[in-house]
Image (cartoon, rainbow, N blue to C red; front, side):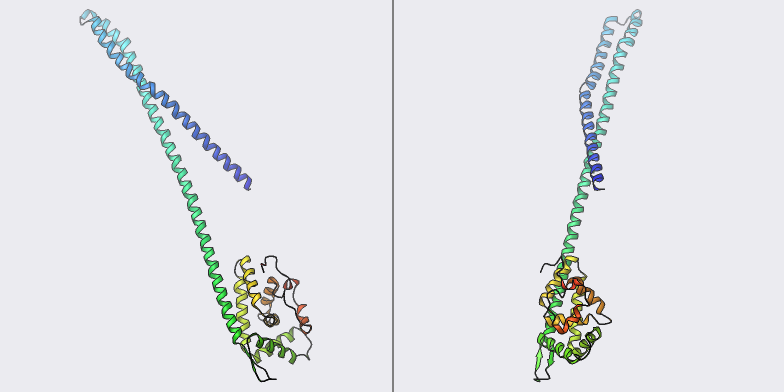
Length: 303
């Protein structure tokens, strides 16, 4: 398809060059003819006047010579004037023909300028589209990192009351302790998807902020997923680097929720969120629920 289009373009260019060459040859030929046609015409008119005057001088004005004078003027002078008139008419025709060829050349140049202007406008429009795309990507990147900053501040605000020491734990340590206690509270139950859902419910009851936290992490994941494929993986990689093991485990167990779990599981497997995480033996039952892609580094990953 592309080769046929290229061949057609080359044929069109060659035909245009041939037409321009033929036009230049025609103008050169007309210029040569215009050098002698007017000269021949005016020379004929002058010669006719000279013969006309010579006829009057030769034959005189006597009535007996009038017939011979008329024959001379009608035969010689009129023939010369007819040829001179034809030469001048032909010169006028050549001039008009040359003018038409020059107008065609002007139109051809205008068409070339118009095509060049269209190509320039197309290039400018493409450059503007690229600038708009770049600006949108930059704006999307700024928005993503603003959301990430807000998420990290929310992580720092998580608090959990340790029942053993009666101390309040903050931040990622609070998330880890809430998950551990919730898991231990359900250790008597068989490990399954239902157990994972109960772990999340139990942890949220001990630290209610975890529900808001996981929704913000879900928002970050979906926001990055909505970008272009290359940008999505780069932003997801930047997010994974900042997540602690406890946040990874919290996200993982929410993948079994009935309402939001399937979409979170899809994102986990698409971007390999679990690729660098090592689950303890008590959490190994979770790994069998995910496709191998959740534990491998995607080909487009840069981190």
